[in-house]
Image (cartoon, rainbow, N blue to C red; front, top):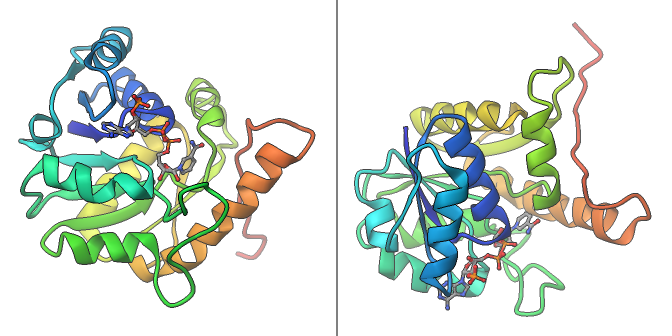
Length: 214
Ligand SMILES: NC(=O)c1ccc[n+]([C@@H]2O[C@H](COP(=O)([O-])OP(=O)(O)OC[C@H]3O[C@@H](n4cnc5c(N)ncnc54)[C@H](OP(=O)(O)O)[C@@H]3O)[C@@H](O)[C@H]2O)c1
C-alpha cells in the first residue's frame, strides 16, 4: 500500500519507518528541513522516499496526518486535494503549549478535521500511544499478547485499511465505533500521556483491553 506521511516528526517519522519496514511504499513529507526527510527515507529503506505534502498525498492509498494542531491548516493546504483519500490522523487538538485540548466534549479534533476535508475519509488511530513505544511494539509483533490500539471512523473501507496498518505496527486494533468516539479517545490520550510522561516507569507505555466474558 502507498502511504503518504504528512508530518515527519516523532509520530510520523517512526510510523512511516515502521510502515516501510512492514512493506509499504512510504513518502515522508512536512518537516522543517528537507535533509531530515531525506535521512528518514534513507534510514527507513525499502524504497521509502521524501517529497512535498502534495507528492506524499498524490496516489497515496492513505495519508498519515501527524502534525501539531496549529499546523493542520498549513499542511492540508500544502497537500492539495484529499478528496476520496483515507486520512489516518494521530493528531490531537492540543493548545499551543500542549497543556490541554482546544476541541473536546461536544466535538473532537478528528471530527473538526473531517469538517475541514469533507470528501476525505477520516480515521482516528495511533494517537492514543506515545511515540516512544512504537518501535518496541513493532519488534514484539510476533508475540501472542499484543497491545490494543483504539481506532474510530465513519467509513468501513477506510477503517479496514487502517486496521491493517495497526496490525502491521504490532497492535491489536480495537474498533471503537464512529468518528465521534474520538471525543472519548482524545481525552483518554491525556491519561496515557500522564502515565507515560509524569509517572516513574517511563514513556514506553501501551495498553491492552481484555474482555472476560464470552
Ligand atoms: N509524540 C507523541 O508521542 C504523540 C502521541 C500521540 C499523539 N501525538 C500527536 O501527533 C501529532 C504529531 O506529534 P509529534 O510529536 O510527532 O510532533 P512533532 O515531532 O513536532 O512532528 C511534527 C512534524 O511537523 C513538522 N513541522 C512543524 N512545523 C512545521 C513547519 N512550519 N513547516 C514544515 N514542517 C513543520 C515538524 O518538523 P521537524 O521535524 O523539522 O520538527 C515535524 O516533522 C500531534 O498532533 C500530537 O498531539 C503525539
